[in-house]
Length: 518
Image (cartoon, rainbow, N blue to C red; front, side, top):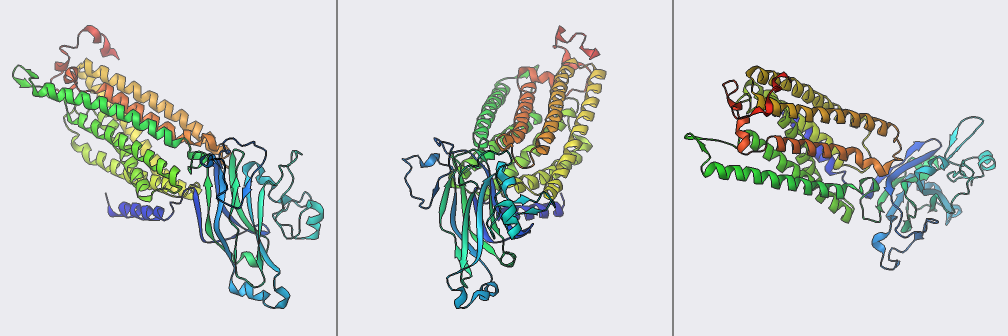
């Protein structure tokens, strides 16, 4: 592995370490972006489940965070504004120095919290010109849109349904006189409807928006904790997966221990020691251990995230790297099994450097993608960044698939030529398992492509976790199949490498009769 990929990976790790903010959204002198006729700061978006026991008719607003809720505070869903401070430049504030501006509104910012289904209500489109307006900045708009001059426009629902009173939630923050700083009063908005919520800070004053910055933070909480709604099911999923891998690890360890015990207490054949635990078994042990460690680390990561509201930077990065190592090791394991390592060939020979090189490159690419995805912001990566990170992983996945099936074809050909029927039966089963997994993967990729294409605004946020969970389940099933097929034991010796054609099949019995035509 060269130094350049390692340097790039380290740079991504350091970058992600500064962006791991989670459900608590901090603003550090964040600046506004010109959008249509306004300046906007998109301050966060998350899927939120309704407060447990809410009547689904209103959104409560509390200015006192300590308001009692009958001991059910852990079941509340809310967005809380804490120490949110708007700051304009001194040069802009100095325009309003003098008695004429004393105590008067000299600029305003609006905090707007709305559901995704209401996003078309933010602003108004002129049917005559097709122009889109976010701000009510002219008397004509006041007459046409029924808005308040100088404020953002909130249009009525297109379907004619009576809008929910007080929703979207809006708060106006005003600069007074020549003051350069204005602090928003602490507020907590209790969420009583499931939805994907967006928070915007909007100013309709162009000169103010050019110099305006925001500091402070908002806290987004679901009834189950701080985990965003899109990640809600990941914690129990990885907890269950860790238990499943733990069970698989226990079963595999028992098999290996039993084989070692028999080997050490007299597993001899005509004076020859029979080695029933091979290097391939040790490779499987390593992958099972890495898989369990990855699942447990992700469970711990989501548990901490859910309890505290921020992801533990070190744990998220470590889990991402362990996951990348597991992905590379599991693919490499399938590849070396497909080459017939330990069955039709005692070593990888000249393939060793190529196999290790592909595995190392895959680890770097997968670690870069996983760290940037999981240890970064909750919001999705930009399309350009995602493409840059996903393409190398996808290309190497394709390389693994092609290499695996080419190796399987050669291995099966060698086994038929040697008439080693027990091994041929073993690899036939393994080929069937791989074929099913490839077909399932192809079908899921098509589904995932459709899901992403129809989920551009995260309107399907409740089901988003399933897309990634599928690959973990598939990896578990494939590893489980390998463990079952290559389990160490008395019968495993007939699958060990042998130079003489057919010598490992003397005791295979009639069950393989006719199999040579497979």
